[in-house]
Amino acid sequence: MKQLLDSYDIITLAWLQAKSELMEREESKYLLHVNQLEHILQGLQSEYDILDIKETRQFTYENIYFDTDDYFFYNQHLDQRKSRTKIRTRKYVDSHLDFVEYKQKINNVIKKERITIGEDEFWQTSPETITFLESCFNKYYNKEKVFKLVPTLRNKYQRITLCHKTKKERVTIDMNITYSEADSKESALVLSHLAIIECKHAEKKPYFKQLMKEQNIPEVSLCSKYCLGAYYLWKTKNYKSFLPTIIYIDTLKNSKSVSPNFVKDYKQRINDNKRHTNQGVVSGWVTL
Image 1 (tube, rainbow, N blue to C red):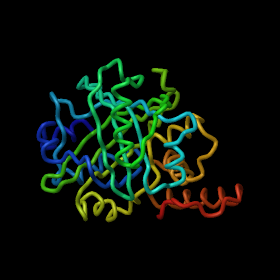
Image 2: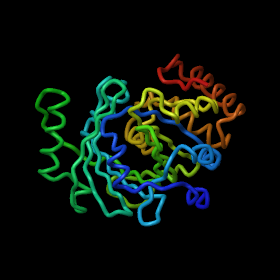
Image 3: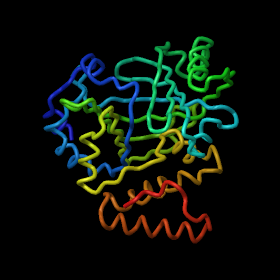
């Protein structure tokens, strides 16, 4: 894959931020087996540039997700609230940069705010961080909120970032996804077969969505890395809304691609799950 990535035209970080920072955007997510990536990347080369920083084109990201003791933010996602929040610290390992990030999803629009933090603040919130987060919460919820946040889990992965040559559209490809307890540097779970692709755009008809549709690769809803990590690390017993995605990921591991055999296996496992659990139809089943 390195040879393929090296053949892309490059974009610098400064130019990417100036052209397509996308702090307010829509997102579309897709799940693929890592075996499919080379084929997808070949089809994108003529339309996208690749982020290059000091001759590096795959970057390591590390996140600590924060929530309340009663998992307020997780339950917002579980209940599919139209307005929901995600809070994390993020470490750009290769660039030695740390941020605290506040993400608010309102209907289908993502609004993201962040501030830089010191490396020692990556693992825990400081008074300054709490002040920033409270101001964000008050803005979006229009009421005062006293945060009592706790680090919930740690997530790490490698990312490739592509930027469309002419559209305000960015595609990120995350691989080697790992989860662990927030206070542990040892990975408890590795999703080595999985690639999570996100199309982040301010376009009505993003190129990547059209390409995925042509290749019969479905968009996946309810695919939050935080919520998946909460499930895999047994942080909660309630994960009904995320079952479609969990089954999709597990089926993909065996099928190794989104293929006709994958579709058949996925639909069979959905039907088996419904029969065994008597849950009926769960909102969010992936349409194939």
